[in-house]
Image (cartoon, rainbow, N blue to C red; front, side):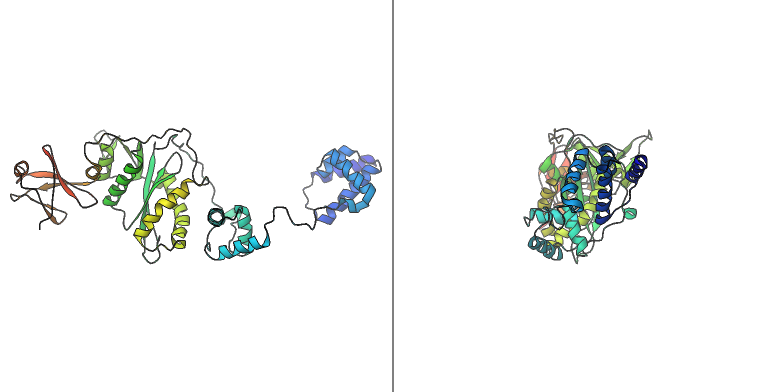
Amino acid sequence: MILAANCVVRTNARLSTQFTQTEKIARRFHILESVRDGFLKVSDAAEALGITTRQVNRLLERVRTEGIAGLVDRRAGRPSNNRIPSEVRARIVEILNGDLKGYPPTHASEILNDEYDIEVSRETVRRIMIGEGLWLPKSKENRTRKVPQLRRRYPNLGDLIQFDGTYFEWLPGLGLLCLLVFIDDATSRLMHLALVENETSFDYLREWKAYIEMHGCPRRVLGDQHAAIFKTSRSPNQNFRAPDTDLSRALGSLGIHCWPSKVAAGRGRVEREHQTLKGRLARELLRRGVRTLEEANRFLPEYIERHENNSKLTRAPKCEADHHFRPALELPLELVFSKRENCQVSSRLSVSLHGETFLLPDVPKTRVLANRRVIVAKSPSGIATVLTDAGNFALRRPG
């Protein structure tokens, strides 16, 4: 009989059947009775119940003094120690239905902690949102499988900056606008953001100038083969593709290695950040009542600072060194980050550039340039300058 009881208990221990609370108590009582009557060892009972022998002895004492009632969980019917007060929950629901309507649980919990001083976990917010019908949990079948990263991150800040533009309806009523995103490969830190109407050469020149003035020059940059960024051509040895755009010429002149990428997978960090920004930044712009490009670009530095302080979105680099550098400049950054054109100087010292007419100053050094071709640099701010070995001469508009 003892052997039979042991077999039954050990078989039950291997089953993964889910018991109701009443069934669980009855099962425990039956096993403890077997121990009390000498049909079962304490160690076998502990194995069957998934508890320690000390706990079995404690339960035996409860059964001896209180009977089966001693097996009822003493916490039953009591509120959880971690349960948030009803008034706090009501306040959270009010905010989720108001300012944070449409926000996912992770983003909503961060704002509740940072801006509303309500300390609440992401999982608690998620449960509240599901209970209120504000969030539909994803089924396991529909969850995106995490793709393993094939390329290791660079170890230092500034070793590699990935940059790209993404079109989206960032502001209500303005249609598609382009957000230029600059992200550090080592830390996933947002280094610079700019919202523009279109992804043009002048926009990239202006924003890279602003980036370098703020942070210095990174060692390498990775962008796509958009005509405004890197347009590559096959070199004679067929092994090296040399960039030949105004942007790549400007970056290369500062000692920055330009690395064009043909496919989006090669720019995984910045492409993934595009999706994060479309979820987070777009909601923040709407919540803050931002309506114009100027207002949006004034808000972006604040968003970058919050992104940098969010440990869920960034990571610490493997090495502490910052590999940004500041090279010795032969030309001001305004001229480095400019579009270059080969133009003809007329006998009257006028130059036609992009449909506009500019005049050279009438001085001895410029008179020798009449009827000759020169290199003209036009900056994103509209300043045009003739670059020569004898010096640089600012052009002016007539009148």
